[in-house]
Image (cartoon, rainbow, N blue to C red):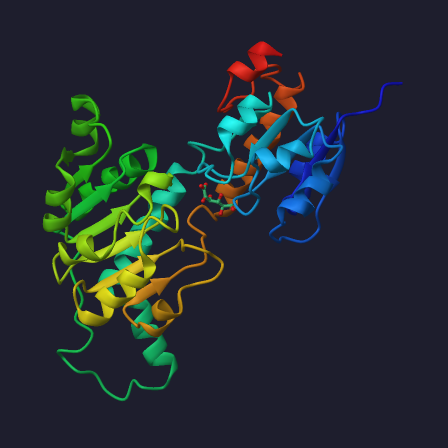
Length: 332
Ligand code: 8YV
């Protein structure tokens, strides 16, 4: 009997979903969630035919050198800046991500963070828990309104569009900037107006970042951009750490250049810049925008579907549903 191909699962998740692989694969699943060094990755991938990885697992040419049998890598996330897609394609390895299944959940959380920053939810709770609520001050805890405000979205992909659609009930105006302008019909449906980056920074009462990380996007929001924002504005980052210069942001928050911020992602996470930890007017969240029960199951299931399909199993056998480099399979 031919032995089953081997799949390495880099972190523990929903055992019933991982079990779907067992009929066709020999599964090695890590029991602890942690980051692996390139050397550790190479050891784990040495005889793997497929892998399910996450943001902390950097798969590049060096790691691929130690993984001669690898044919497919499924990433547990829509953002895949942890994968060197060119190197994977070059090595003939297919790769997939988890788009769409998380759009609405991440959009919900973007609003939650933006509203928490605007209305100072975290700060106020910390104050209450510290026993400081001795009486109410009429002019205490003043925040910024969301309703009737101008919401600026930088990066208008599927998640950005889901955020824009939610603005209707708040009677908020939505402006956006993106590498390319959306079709007029989509702009109308999302109720969003295209502006250049300078206008976005100058006009937004609440700026939210939803763009993918590329080396060119590093510190897209730095000291100069923060200075260009309104002193009453909030900034929310649910995209990737590194898009914001966290040190410059901490300074801008301390100096009152903007009113508040909310961050789900950090450059160098899980480490958080110490200057941010000093600031009260920033909501800090441990990269959980997609973490609803249903959505994390949907992402896991999609990753498993991609691996199964890449090896000719399941309803989309031969056509991994969200493959990033389909040419690789066509060439196989
Ligand atoms: C993470 C994300 O993948 O989808 C993305 O790009 O950043 C998240 O959904 C998730 O936190 C699992 O690590």
